Length: 275
Image: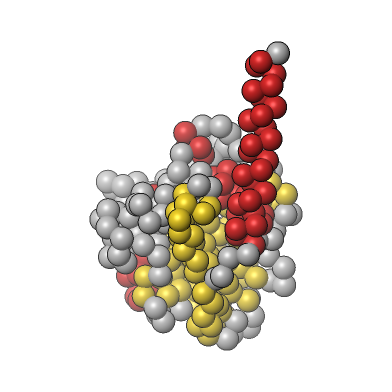
């Protein structure tokens, strides 16, 4: 009887905390800045352990896909460069670090197609079960159909496999209860919403000013701000959002300092450019 009461109590406590956290996110005073026509940057620092009983720092670049903007990939087969270097070299408006890569040799460890050229192949599992698909310079997110070579069948100039998927059609995607998903880390997420909107999202972590999130927590935030589709990208020390207007927006954790200088060199990024 005591065990049943404890389970009921814990379930009610989780529900109450979730309700409070959703209100914290919905009622937050985001700092919003227009960077270009159809491009907005929103940031919010949740202090005083106000979100998930922790400090959190979230940055969101919102892009309205239109004829004057295009999304593409920046890819290196063997080299590693910072996200900001990718952005500057490609004369981009913004750059977001991409999918998982080999820390010692460089290059993606998952499937990437750039301008029709395949850089790598990957094995389907619960972590890499989704893809960014850029077709005719428009971006959408797609989930694996379970077929072994599913990514090779995707139609688009640029393809980047990552994951796990977090939201599909505004519904939460089931997540495995493994360490990667449960532990709080810096997170990088790409999402889509209504009216052809794309969102570059970073959650800072590994610092007293921002704890980072589990993927369960991040998924809840995405749902509370009413995004439709979202997939996880490479996080941790790689998490970086850069814009040509502001420089590095978030607080990359690779130097273990609360500044904008701790970028980790990465192998691939998502770029926003003017046509």
